[in-house]
Length: 139
Image (cartoon, rainbow, N blue to C red; front, side, top):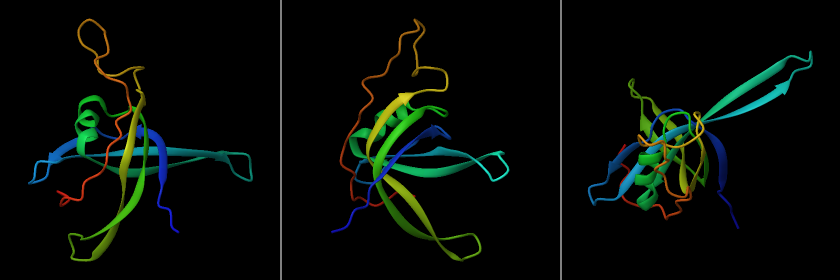
């Protein structure tokens, strides 16, 4: 038996990018930051921010691009996937992505989602579960 499951709650570091595979399947990419805080031996507060690259496939990709913005708080549940690439100098590197299975919109840095001129939020319920596709990754 094996388990590959990740649960993150963090804030978006940039607006999501939406692309489509050659077969027409949507894929959104964005990054979120998670923070940890603790006191060191001397009682000084220490903090650490970890950045996570998120990949969202299929039906939930488009709502992510439409309703998530930089600074927005989000819950992501998914799995870790590795991919290999060559950097600019030709050295092979490994990157780790979180492939989301469940994305929930929690809040925003300004207290709400995108709003129209009337001040009304134009966002639906924040749970967009969907199955990730196995099409070629467009990056």
